[in-house]
Amino acid sequence: MGLLSEVGLVFLLIQLAIWSGEISKALPWLIGLAPLAFALRYWRRNPKVFKLLFKPAGNELQYLLMIFTFVFFERAIGLIGEFWNPSFFVIPYLPLKMLKFFLLYLPWAFFQQLLLNGYFYNRLCGLEDAAAAEDAAAVCINGISQKNAVLISGILFSLVHIPNPVLLAVTLIGGWLSAYFFQRARNIYLLAVFHAILAVSTMYCLPEAWHHHLRIGPGFYTWHP
Image (cartoon, rainbow, N blue to C red; front, side, top):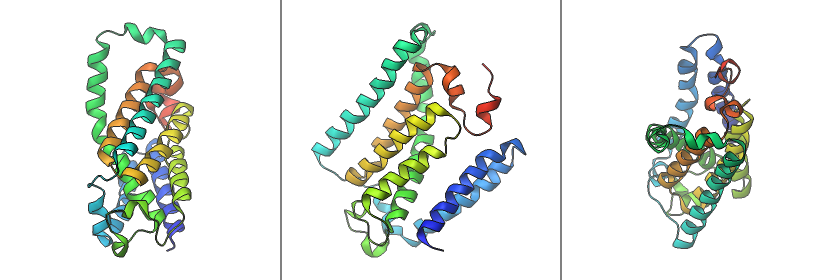
């Protein structure tokens, strides 16, 4: 199976897992094993590339740019919330609730970053053991260009969140930024933290009527306040 064909199939399997929830609650978990199997097979065949996922790289300038960009993004969401949803300020125990949501969401954010960058971005770049040097995540060997790998990874990450309009927009920007900075600094831990912070901001700052409690797939339509 070709590189792009495999990536496309994995994306379709993820979508099928999400949308099959209307048929049976067990189906999403069963179907979800298939795309995970593709990722695990890729990591098993390329163990050096997998290990590099957990070895941050990058310089101070790249980290400063990453922090500034994500803080700016988070504040933009906050400002939209202050204008359109000022009532979120008076939510009882708001800081505690946001902290609890952040801590619970962080492992899920890390898993998403692992798939987004550890599988989709690296797979699109065609990284293999032979190319797994210290800068492996920044070099596309047998796949498409870095620029296209970043762009496609961000688009696919966004489309997973169909039909939620808020998450489509947030994850398109967030997914592209995550792939871009992963290519530059390869720090999946920091990206997971920013991912979770953005999820918290979206959840509490923006009107729930917009994002339906961050639901995607059929859950977006069945959500009730």
